[in-house]
Image (cartoon, rainbow, N blue to C red; front, side, top):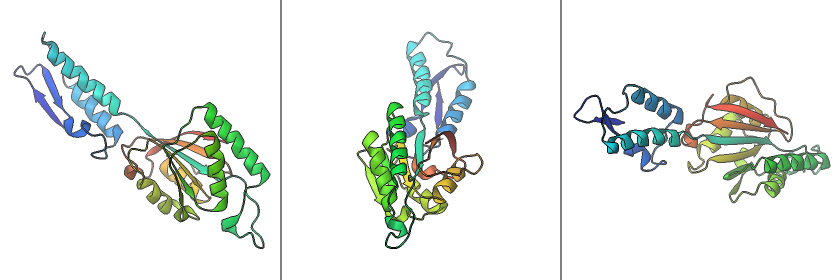
Length: 228
């Protein structure tokens, strides 16, 4: 980040931050770091002591740009709804949701819709119970991009994180539907709290201050709320 000064050393004329701002997706930058950099730079200089309005415009435009860049990614982690027991021909992968599990997810869907929740993308395990869970939530919060991944079935922290890190940086709101213990472990890993025990049909809403999903990692997120 380059700071250019006018001839008068008491005046900040222009912040050359075009390398970061021409295309938000040109690089992956921690928003938190960008905001801190901006505050540190701006705090070193007083308002321009000149009547040149062009310089005032550049000064406040730089401040506004820093504020605009400070947007978070929102991650929703959802454990599938209550499912039937695995026995006989109903092997684990093909377990269906129970009537109670379906009702539970419909309640959650209504809550999400009332809160005007939206998902830019949905990632779901391809197991039957997670696909059913995804379809039920999609009835209340439709998403144009739903991807079913076999790799999310029985996935643990590292595997789930790998899928999150590959999400396109243009996606700002991501729903991931999976299984325990993976969902509980990844929620605990990303947030800074204690271990989260995710019950069937439980959703964790996590705010993450990163510019792209490849930078999501340990303790990069803050738990906003638990929904069920």
